[in-house]
Image (cartoon, rainbow, N blue to C red; front, side, top):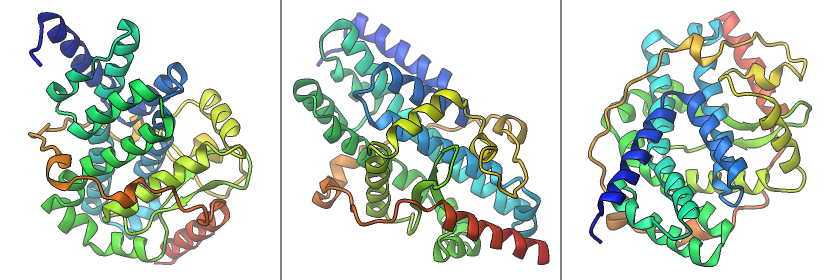
Length: 313
């Protein structure tokens, strides 16, 4: 389809708005969250906002003295850049899709032909058109989870620097072996829900994790509490956003703005993962309902042991 002058204006606006909100983890998290409250039918945006909060907490965790004892400065900087790069890449691809949907709602007609000029996968163009016609919220949410994890697979997980210096390095391998890393769904009370992150380098595992987290977030037991938290607690990048309510014996981590400067990313030429990888049918299956949900006690028990070990090291 030929791009009209009017379409060019729309593209310019979408690109400009994406750059405005893709400054750091805090701006991205708030952009996802605000979009969900305006368009709750796009369920993925709530999932994205909560996972993005966790990315920020993982970043500022690295500033603790205990992590400084266990990891050298280069190792901590590399881990930070891994979280930051993945966070940035997902947003740079997803937010233009969200703004295109917003534009379609405003004009009351589908504008998803713009997505190819925004370097969005043909898979998502197809899925957005399907959603516009049939309004299948869960299908679109699953499609966005599949897309986001495929988008970071080559530029982050398979990128030579990250593969050698982060994912094959001892700290990450130990973290993976001991199930130390987790996505925590914030709350003002125990128990804390979430999921441990294991075999993060495997694409299908990350997609399964995203679907599992989505099923927990939108379950009757957790949804209203998570909405209350996100409305009342502005994201700072510090776990103190929720830990201040839990009477935990851990120091307060700084906000991201105090811990790290904004990072400028190189936006390399993107290849459409869908054209050469396609969609694995297993990615479309329902999430595993047997997985443990209330992981807060286990997460903080391991965290306590890690801090004690760092103090003794």
